[in-house]
Image (cartoon, rainbow, N blue to C red):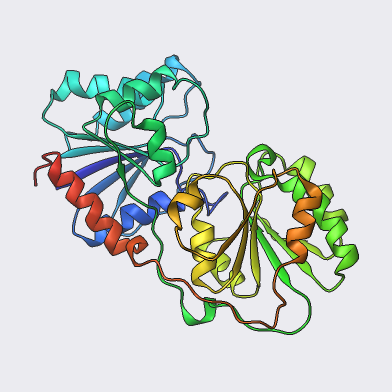
Amino acid sequence: MTVTHVVRMWPDQGDPQLGTFVRAQISALRDLGLNQKVVVWSGSDHSPLPLDGIEIFVGPRVPMGPRGWPAKARSVLQLGQPNLLHLHGSGGDTAYLLLRCVMQWGQRIPRIVTEHQYFGDGALPTGVLWTHRLANARTAVSPFLAERFEPIAPVDVVPNCWAAPLPHQLRQAHSGGRRILHVGDWVDATKGISPLLKAWHLHAERNPLDRLTLVGDGVDRPLLEPLARESPNCTWLGRLAPEDLETEMGRHDALVVNSPRETFSIVIGQALERGLQVLSTRCGGPESTYIGSSITYRDGRPDAIEDLVMHLGNLRPAHETYPVAEFPNFRPEAVGAQILAMYRRVGAKG
């Protein structure tokens, strides 16, 4: 079976974390014997990182909006007719691609659309709506996100995936203060980093042995970097490659998530499997994904500083051991098999 993937996010030298969840799914399908091609529509200045056994093509750098849609469509159609087209994300450009696909190849190619992160409220944009209508199947990474698209057509819940932790990635016991980790793109409106840093100032005054580590970078760096550097006992590591991030988790006691909304949050599952405590806002996706897990959810909003300070202070001491979770259904082999079964269900040949 030959599958062409169209992705908006893919790891590159500038951001090795970008789209690692998509890369993991495609790796899982490769290990099941599928022949795959990947077209990257990121528009990044950096070359996408390679993936053994997969051909990766860089889509055109074109203006935003409809003027760029024909060139984007050609970057996919010129690769030839696959057995299946898998779109990771939706918008006006993907709806246009599907229309061109039908015009060129008819209805012979099953079409899949996958949603990983969708934060829009209100009515779905026209391009998103038509991408989902023109697809043969749709997936979302959590029940929380699936509800957003259920009014269009049925949605399969296919989770993100990651490998089991290695021994050196498990939480390493230590003495002294608590080590608290935050991981996320530096987009303050979606990750709540500036309220976290304000809360940390108060927390550090009361708990001078505790330390905060920030992993990430992004468009709000000019705002957030000065706040991070002024924060006591705070270290900013920038972006980390996935394997380095997983090792870094083993040096910490707790993960804090201060987002107003998350559709899945892989980092929460990775932290739980490495024995970290998790303190999170009630942000949707994790509550529908990690049912029964020992996550501490706080009811305060991301900008509820005093509530966040109180919960940070209630994290367990560093010397205590914490339960280690396991998520076998999120392993690459399990997720790959689920996606392959969906491909077969919609009639993909090969």
